Image (cartoon, rainbow, N blue to C red):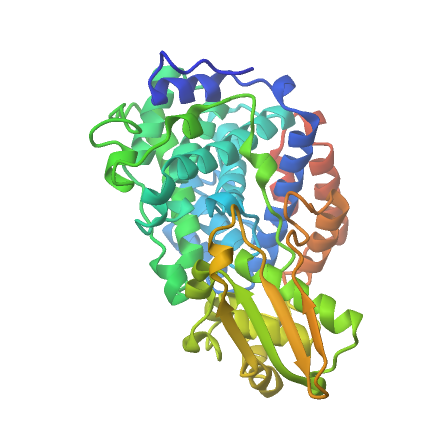
Length: 468
């Protein structure tokens, strides 16, 4: 189903797409990718529950009280839908291990998937209407597609303006919520417009390594749910939120806007197919360096004591984000997640870069910090000219003068080298060890099976209830 858009406003085209896309229109590959993203995002939320933010927000929700509408993952209990979304989305983003779309610099599903489950529970609790698996898969696919289109259509105006994907996440969250609740076109437009009025969040937290990196994801989920609830209560909104004089692209993107990217092939091409699943809990742009380092030390059995120096060659943007003297000895987890020095050093010393390598004790380990001082990050101007995500090359020079190099372009998780469903299930089981509270292995296996067979479910809400 391709949506004709030339004679429609962007808002009309998008609501038409959101309201009318059928499960049968989704390619088999897209359905599998969406299931994979659901598995991966829930795994990230489970592991993220043990790090700052999740428990604190759950406790706040309990103190605030209110109608028991949606489940809070891992910690259990139910809260008003906006507060559940705030907690669950924050947990999903807490470890920077949630999936991403590299070409759009978007973290889509830590916002989209927990919010979709919250809205499905809200729909059942308030409207007495169950959301079935096919409908849920369509909703999540739409959400990922929309958040990427919105970001990519803004081009450099959004990127250089300092906005992050979470800034605009309330819009697709509200759209898919409106669909699940069966809104007509007018009410759906109101939900999307109310979501636009709540768009916020900038890249400042990323640059400074602040905890608001994860909180912004939760705030977007809260805003998306609130937009749906308020529209359902009868609140109206402005309509020309994309292309108008005070619409998104004029306000946030300095007027830069590509309509074809936003609306082209709606219902035919799905950006969810471009998602990268992350094997490491760090900024995606460190993954090339981590993977190539692990390949070198394992293939050539390079011991930490063998290493004389390490050179990481990357592009200007990655260097600005992940390099610099302040990143050599990170003091907090968010700083370590955005450090080429620390992540490469950990890969050499521990031959691992997973969640355990980001604890406070791990960040103080002398052998890793000493190794980080041997890492040099340099810029290759040629990489700035490459389309997409340029590869990050690693060279390790040993004390006996030998040089080992690796520069694989598409590291595991990239759409051109994707992780399989089995790979993601292994990651899920690995994440369980870091849950703030132990989860029943039997219930976890049951939840995984339900996700794999989601298109056969009459009601998706038991999935999250098994993980609380």
